[in-house]
Length: 166
Image (cartoon, rainbow, N blue to C red; front, side, top):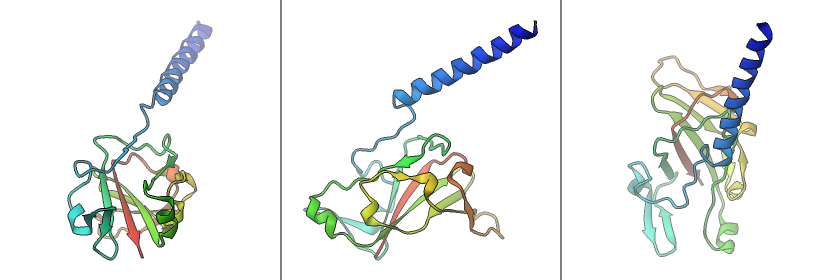
């Protein structure tokens, strides 16, 4: 009887793992936003950017892009890499200076996580989120301090802000 129980549990675990693997292989765990359009951007876009012939141009000192994830949940245990791509002429990308910072949050628990500033030159390359330094904050808690946290210790996330500097 004991042997049957172990076999049953092992089969269930293998079945669950196979389903997760199939979901990953069929891109069910990936979000791909090809173009940032106004329907996907959270309010406030017009405060930071204007449309120009070449694309968009910042009009504030530290502009940001808040992207709506359409109900997609980022799970740090599964989502390890992020690629932010600029789709401009190569010479234009090389001339970009400055920095950006990633800010993820869970809007239901009011928990916020951000990286240190990263050079814009790291855009167009996959960012290993587990190798970045993350800081957490919980504004609803009066005595909340920003603490270092590892990517894999973060629970689910449902919002992304990309903030630019310099």
